Amino acid sequence: MAAEENMATYKFGQHLIRSSCVFFRTKLSYAFVNLKPVLTGHVLVAPLRYVERFAGLTKDEVADMFQTAQAVSGKIESHYNASSLTISIQDGPDAGQSVDLQNDATDHRRVRSEEEMAQEAAILRTLFERENIDVI
Image (tube, rainbow, N blue to C red; front, side, top):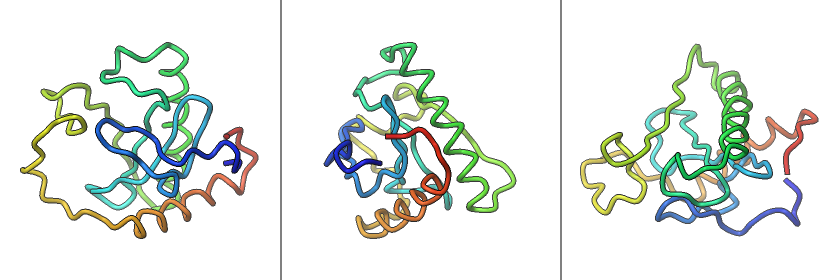
């Protein structure tokens, strides 16, 4: 990611994601490490433009987000020696969407420190720097 293109923070629902936690970015989307990962390698891909629901994305944003997910998933699977992975969209509270919900009291996963997240993002960022991938 070029320094001049690096945002200080990204909006993800009610959360602000620091650029230190972002490891991949295109013109329309970005990938970042998870504050409360379910498993090792649990990362998120989101559009740069904030929208509340999937239907609010443009066709270009949808295409870019899925191309980003494809690029990121291959690197994550290889880096963590995984045999498979899950790609999902939680679109609305009845689908399990926790971002934008007021009460997340049933989620007891360990919250990682900013430093832990930045360290993982730095490692993952190198996976994309080794190749000539068209990212910002």
